[in-house]
Amino acid sequence: MRPALWGIVNVTPDSFSDGGSFADSLAAADHALRLLDEGAEVVDVGGESTRPGAAPVAAADEIVRTAPVIAAIARRAPGARISIDTSKAEVARAALSAGATIVNDVTALQDPQMASACAAAGCFVALMHMRGNPRSMQLDTQYADLEGEVVAFLADRAQRAIAAGIRPERLLVDPGLGFGKTPEANFRLIRAIPKLAALGFPVLIGASRKSFVGKASGVEHAADRVYGSIGAALAATRHGASALRVHDVAATRQALDVFCAAERA
Image (tube, rainbow, N blue to C red; front, side, top):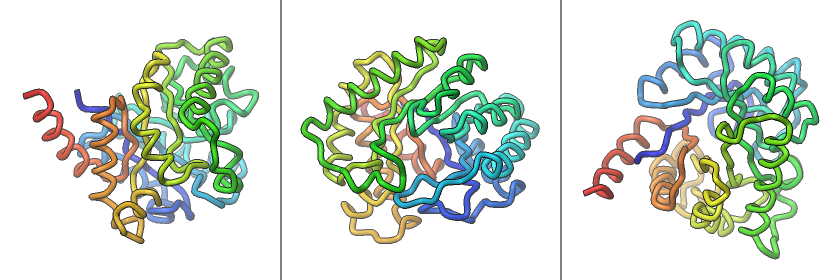
C-alpha cells in the first residue's frame, strides 16, 4: 500500500529548501491546496525552520505565521487533514483551534505542556528523534548503537504520550533523518524502519530534499533534489514507511503509484 503523503508548507523566511517562497498566508494556503489536489493526504504547516543552525522563533511570531494559513486551508478545503509542525504547546493550541488535527513535534513533547495540549484536543501526534536542538544537533552525530538509541527514545516518548492521555492509535514515530545524523546514519535508519514499526506505531519519514540526499546524488541545491528525494521515498516505502513528508507531492505520488503496482503484481 502506498504511504500517505504529507505535503510540506513552510511559512518561513529561512527554511533550507523553500524559505520565503510561501511567507504570505494567501500564497501558503494556495500552495497547500495545490498539494492536496496533487494527492497529499495531509498538509504540514510550519512557521519555524528546523534546518541545522536555524535561529529560534518566538511562539507569538510562529502563531502569526501559521494560524491564518491553517484557518484559510480549513475554510477553503473542508475536511482537509492539516498538521502543525511545531514544538511549542502554545502554537499547537492555536493551530488546533484554527483547524489542524495533527501535531508534528520534532522534539517529541519536550515542551512540558505539549502532551496535555494534544491529549485535550484528541489530535494525532508525530514524535521525532533529535539530539539537542537545530542549533546544536549536527555537533553530536556519533552513536554507539544508532538504531537501538533511536528506537528506545521513541518508545519512551510514546509511553510518556500515552501516560499523558494521548491515545496510542493517534501516535506516529519519526526517526528524524537529518536531525543529528550523518548521511550514512540516515540511510541506516531507512533500513531500520521495520524496527521502528515494531513499536506498534506508523512510521513517518522525512527525507525530502535534505542534504544527505544531495550528498548521495551529487546535487548541491536543495530545490534540485527532486529525483533523489523520490529515490529515498521508494527506499522508505520498500522498508515499510507508513507516511512520507515531501515537498514534491505530484512527482512522488506518481513514482510511488508505479512502484506499489509493481510490488503488488
